[in-house]
Length: 102
Image 1 (cartoon, rainbow, N blue to C red):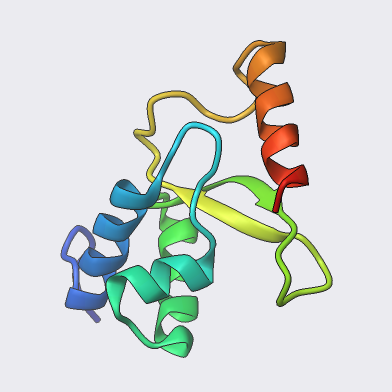
Image 2: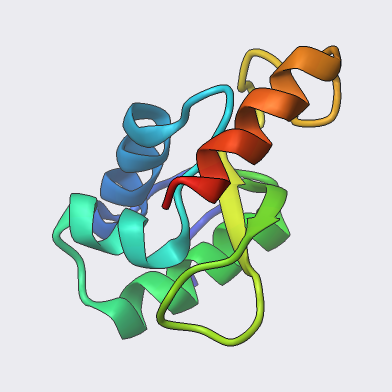
């Protein structure tokens, strides 16, 4: 078993992708993380699940996407500047209007 605190290549790539893709109004989904990190979906799914459990990634919201019937989780590093839901009403309105145009 690998000691805590060491990161494999897949884990490092997914964490870098989460930091690169995170925006205040929208965080990346699992599919977006795996595509950006150029990691297979099955490997990304298992690694993101482990990273969420260990606290390296946090679920900051859920979003509807075309490829899934249920809303999917959006992931961000725990040191993200401001978690969702901590903004004023204008940020919520902008996010809602952005979802309508897609």
